[in-house]
Length: 198
Image (cartoon, rainbow, N blue to C red; front, side, top):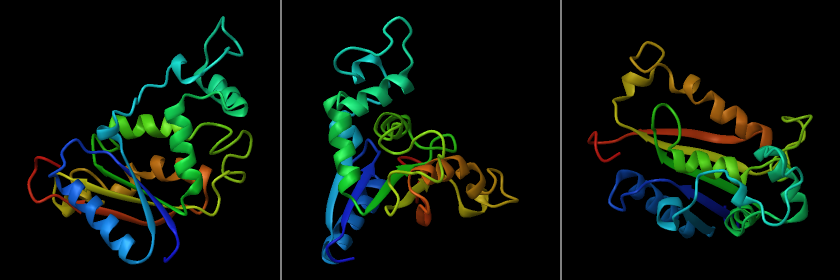
């Protein structure tokens, strides 16, 4: 992996959490292997997860009826997205590998990470219509989900109380596939030692 650029999109509030330890270990190990590692620590950055009109700078294409998806696509074409979105898009564009490090919240990513995905991976940047899966603009990039759970491994099996994690994470995997098929190197699920903090 020497010479590769890695972006870690990290979503946890506590610097002493198991998620933080996993992120720190990834940064250390990838750096030793010769990678240039950038971390987007969403909580530390105060990243705005809400997709709103303020994401579009300049005039709206349809001010009488706001449609976020349409307006973000048009703004992307004009380079008229908010500066925090453009900065994150640059990081994604430069990365060979994107690692998403997060605790499992309600069988998905934390809201702040979902907001990052909604705002950063907009139409025009990550995908276009039609041809979601065939025309992903981030083809050739790799992604890895590294997540922690508050339960034991047996809870996340087909017969477990929570069900097979591959099924409930499928929407996240397939939506990333539209941006960059084939997407996932590996899906890593790690149980936390204590239930809290994740």
